[in-house]
Image (cartoon, rainbow, N blue to C red; front, top):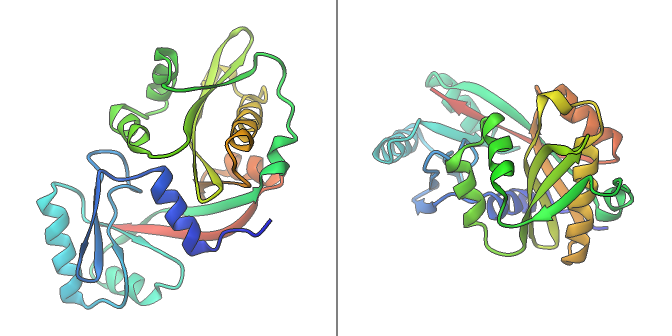
Length: 239
């Protein structure tokens, strides 16, 4: 497997979890997330910026009634320092993971423990809602073009978990994975990832990827234990 570069992984993330709009304004890409979270609302730079450029981006985000929020990619140390000097604080450092699809497709979920379903069932939307993933993020999923599905995880004869997966550039990316608090530590997440990998394999993907926050110790331990490897990092700065 030829792993995607960090730059390619940014594009895969955007395609599989897209903003409502992403508009070029000079050196910036300004995203209208419509309440769908940081990834779809953060501004990103396409080259060196000045403090005046940053103020322009602030005004554009305020025009969209959004927080002044910037995504800082690897290597953008100068921008990071500029934003720090303007009082922006780091929030949600993120880890990017990837692995060959076969690594996760080897997981053999028990019968009836995982299903690929699109559009998602009402119970799946309720599980997401319990984890703080509401209508605005469901709209993000609906905006995705290309192969996509939702994953329902089951254990103890009940719905126990849910996730979203989509494919871009032969890479499947998992988003919005949630497991009901009462059903954790029963391999629900592992079985859902195996189900997602098999679905992705059937739809022509060759790699599997996801992102999670550095602070999510349990998720990082799980993904590492399943053979996924870290390929990059990014973080946000917010006022």
